[in-house]
Length: 423
Ligand SMILES: NC(=O)c1ccc[n+]([C@@H]2O[C@H](COP(=O)([O-])OP(=O)(O)OC[C@H]3O[C@@H](n4cnc5c(N)ncnc54)[C@H](OP(=O)(O)O)[C@@H]3O)[C@@H](O)[C@H]2O)c1
Image 1 (spheres, rainbow, N blue to C red):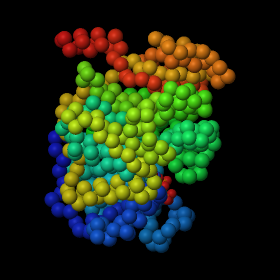
Image 2: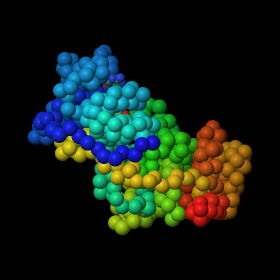
Image 3: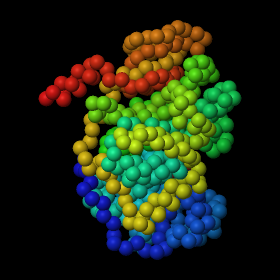
Image 4: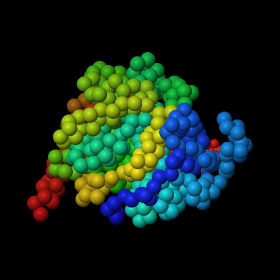
């Protein structure tokens, strides 16, 4: 993967900024509304491309067109904003725009997580700019914070609640004793969860965000499949009660962590969160991210992770950055990337209706084990690599895995790391 050596922009920025908007759903309309309320901002939505000609729109029909490629072909547009809901098409459009050296903003985390290396390389090759603050944690300015503010500072960890839908479900289950299906139906009714909830509840969405964070926090370009992601589809009130009895809440936490030996790991999993963690009070559809920096210490950002206005606000901040001729510095991406590892031990709580899952995880140092009406349960150590390998089996078996403790270097991994350092 080529590392970027510089990011260049055309010398002048037209005022007002002439925007080509691709997509007019939740995010597109949110941004449009914000710009209507801020005429002094200096941006004008010139053209809007959508997909379905039969849909009723909140603006007159003449404002819409149905071929996003026509926006690509318009050299008068200063910025192209891609906020469509089709990752493959989004990649085609963003790639084509960057090949023209254009300024592009996207919110599409699934597309970015899959194609970030190529998109970074296209910016480098053709001199365009891609900004994507809205893709991680909606309104929370985490990417610019990592890229600009912490661009030169080593980070011990970045961890957070990056998915509002699953957090909403867990909050309802914890506070009201609601069961999973009812809490999910409520989240869907309120518009927090997708019609197909798998992306949120099986943690595909926060995995995409973890991949994007890894690029800015550590200069690591990961493929989504390298990152363990465990969801909450199998969670029951029994699991919530078990956590509460230990003084914890269960939250889906994405963790990026640099180990003392310099290697970096990343995972997304339901996790025991203690009352002294800033994540403990992040409830409902809110997101929160904690950054532990080598010199600054710990900082915490909390805010709305989704919705038209919060996400539109992040796109607005990208527009403002483009007005100021700013692009991501990718400072850490220009340095030698740290090694990535899943060869680490972690303590988990496992509950599974099927005994063979218990065997497959080869738990060690088991401190709790037994069985009940909802299957077998145990608390013990396994490795991230084993969980990654067994992820689909766990899901098919209807098992729940909750991380209950810190990540540890296993003895085998320690020996490998020491012999590598000795060479
Ligand atoms: N919603 C959020 O809170 C949120 C937060 C962060 C990031 N995001 C990301 O932002 C993006 C947009 O999400 P959304 O919630 O706004 O989606 P949405 O409400 O489903 O709207 C999608 C829009 O894209 C349009 N579209 C789809 N395919 C198109 C194509 N080929 N050409 C032109 N337009 C096309 C649709 O057209 P029609 O109107 O004709 O159907 C619709 O206007 C996604 O990548 C999502 O992951 C969303």
